Length: 327
Image 1 (tube, rainbow, N blue to C red):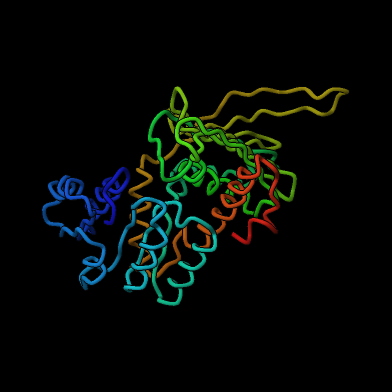
Image 2: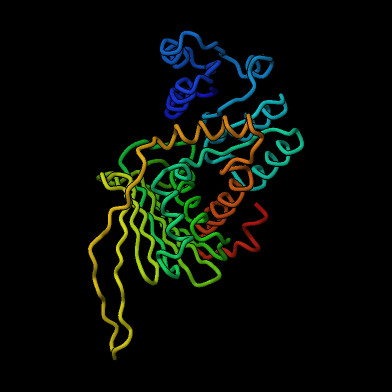
């Protein structure tokens, strides 16, 4: 486990529960000591090189600051070790493509930590979309809002939005055509705290993603509207996935709504991070392609690249087929 800051200890806990945690690495003595006390049988490393040259380490999970993901991931792959890299895998789609190719050439497993792809509610929502339970897709909106966990090394777009972009792309199974992004900077110069992202798809489907770490309460809600039903994934609620079979009657002179009670979708009580870590280990052992592999990371990063470019241009739309592909 490389990186024991905000997220690394959660990964360490899950890998330990699955009997795979061999070592802990962090250059900060206090962070390394805190985690080492919980896992006394794990080796301790205060330098990345010590991990890379240890023949007993087969794979590495990387939860260092986002700006270091590409450099650390490159070093891990060059050392012949499998890698799970927290989101975002890199600072742009081009660097993610480089990592993907290096893993392929070395016969190594490369996976990005898009956690929501392993959430039982998201998996079930994907099934509902794919089996036609919602009818024809209309639009999607997502709010990922909170107060705190404010960063200075990456803006809110790159910190929060990868989760929602990943889910959005998996639901629609097609690449968006155009994005626009408006951001607001209130706390740290040059680091937007709030962004509103509009994403357009070829078939007329639109999505709006609102992310902020400057919000009075926590909200993690995804709404998917189809022609025959609507679904709501609320990760802060007890009933995390609801299906609303509302209808719109178009037979008269004026459209009228036919409301229906929400149906609670039953879900297994599995921790998404435990499923993600288990999937990484299984892919290594069975030589399987991860659900969130390097190609998945590139698709998400192309959208983020486009949103960042749009925000840099004061919200001007960006055609993903042209300008953002160069990033």
